[in-house]
Length: 184
Length: 257
Figure 1 (cartoon, each protein chain N blue to C red):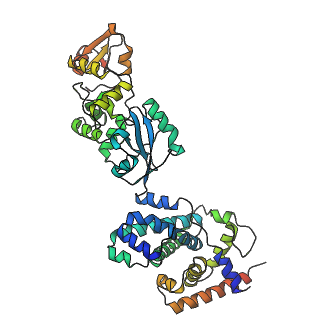
Figure 2: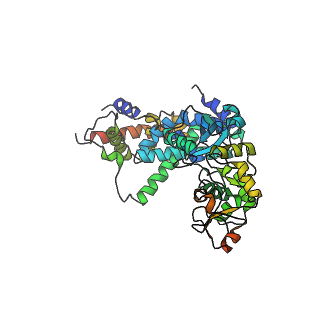
Figure 3: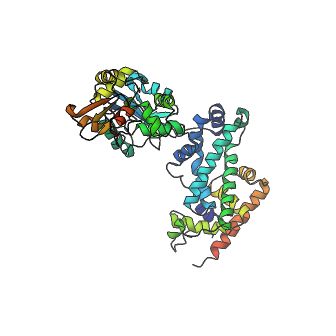
């Protein structure tokens, strides 16, 4: 399917129900990939991704056509997703899991490989990223995992473009330090 | 460790969203399209549609027309498929064959509570038996709501499978049907009943029948009444008349007092 972003804005404004599935299809992989690094496990990531699109739809049905046509859809949707990730992290830390079983963690191996082809690699990276400050973590995940441009990340996180660039630089430096300090 | 190695590894973290995520989202929003297919029903080909929760509609093709016309008249978006999903297929075949819902799930979520109760009660009526509208009203604890029961059944989205054709007027006449009284009679005949004979009996004043040997009275089509021989059969005009004669109500068909 070749739907350009602007194209989908017009189709959503015209008939939200008909165009919404295409909106989900075109953005779900990116949202899920990023959210997977910003939540505790795959289950939470699926929940947050779903909830994001549910909220997107509900919001869209309340907007007039002009507003929908002018939406920066991807950045707007990421703002919603990022908020849900933050909220989830907050409730998690306030009320820790009683059972404490983390599905992803259960498959962690001792392989510290950099390339994250499997669940173990994914978990290792999530661990590394969780030790980077939130602003730097968001910038690194949104830019390097999801592939968003600086200007869009700045819009999502509410920071300036130049701050975003320095968040990214510092985030990468912090990651490198974390990796270098890992026991080999 | 170069930054390039790190950014390459970060890029490799990109993955695909799980299968079915879109369906989950649409389902949560209540806008997941139904699916529908064509089946062989007791009165010929018919469209059956379903949601994730169960069957949502049944419409004879003679009424609905083409699949496109069915989809256009369906209350929700609906996509045509060649075969029902495995979770439904066997139960659907069996329900059409036996005239009982059995394990076939139905989705009545879009309906009001009253109509849902009426339809669930209606689904308990076995094939080859009929009950008056007043019976459903009484059974669901709303004995005054006979007319409301009639209109709830008249808007039954899943006729045939939910056998509203087995509910008749209290005066014993077969009564109306959303797809015409001819189809109602045809359905009853396909279950071994003789609608004209039933109406004839009713016209003679008989509403209930008792069996002398057991002292129990039933609706005439109750499987227990049908089992008793003509020799021991007593006709009654009302439950009161049966009770006065020392008969008690059948516990299976529970004829309205």
